[in-house]
Length: 129
Ligand code: SF4
Ligand code: SF4
Image (cartoon, rainbow, N blue to C red; front, side, top):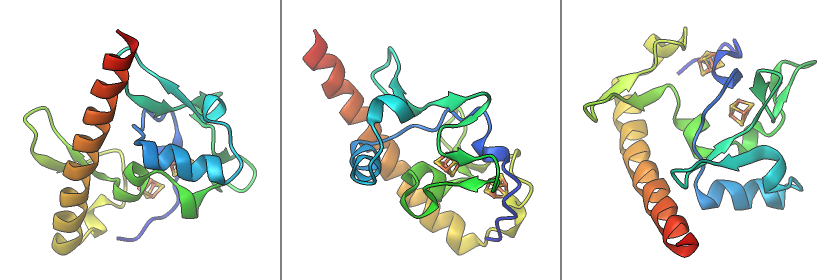
């Protein structure tokens, strides 16, 4: 896929994070409390600052942690719709440059990632009760 770095997917992000994402970004020197918040559903999501993701560099208009970005950001623009079917997010202007092979590969990764995030969230909620 060709990414034009249009920034759209880094604005008002609600990107979900798995524990591996959080650990990787902590190893890069960031504090989890600064870059993510955990919802009442037990799922951590990226924090926004003034309408952009915490990691978005406004001057360079790029992700400050592109090489270590969350798996969900790597998989984007592949998403799941309400019926659980794989879809391409309409927000991304380059979504149609994704090949069928990339769609299949990213879709498989997304399904595994969401299962991990859900199971980590369930364990987090169990620990709180
Ligand atoms: S982590 Fe990087 S790629 Fe992902 S939403 Fe934030 S700025 Fe964008
Ligand atoms: S919306 Fe698409 S083209 Fe724009 S930065 Fe995100 S992935 Fe790249």
